[in-house]
Length: 246
Image 1: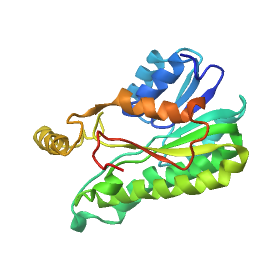
Image 2 (image 1 turned 90 degrees about the vertical axis):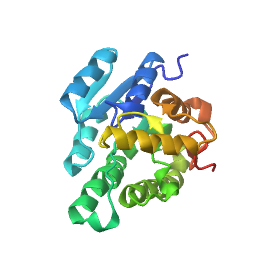
Image 3 (image 1 turned 120 degrees about the vertical axis):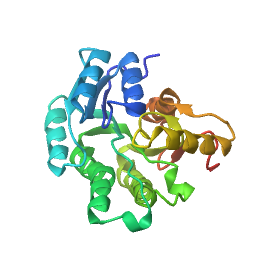
Image 4 (image 1 turned 90 degrees about the horizontal axis):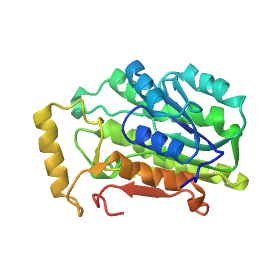
């Protein structure tokens, strides 16, 4: 397949998990990937995994100035055909443990980051370009420990609908990927025993009783970024084994 031949695709948060799987697959399908991340060792590993015509750069969605820096790097080489705003992280805790610093950290990375990146890059999008924003089934799960994280991802779903309206006149499509239980390093902050119990509980609630893979989630993002989805916008695509049954 060569769905992305001749296309420039920007992916934030691409050094691990779903974003990394997508970057590798887009490059294999002929795309020129511009991938961002924060961790030096993961950035180096991704550079080794991608062809030389792709670009991997250190960029932190939580830093307001890095959105402008991303634009500076991207702007000189022509239009962007795909933008995947994937960077984000989860931090959990009971309601009474939440303080201003906890809230501000997650909002900065998960909401302000994509908003500023879109503000900086939207005019660089080619007509008929595609944007994908990574949300989460946490929005619908009602987890007692994930209130702020779920709120950040709910904000992204609202932004996707607004952006789809704002950019539709140019033929630009904006959709959200809504991953559920996917086998990535996303839950690495949990202790092993707690993580195993958590995953077993989630699996018991699924119509497809297993954890999904990063490649399975990335495949749906690539569909939305490709010309296979030219009449899809403002939509949410759950990749969750039937967890929320939307």
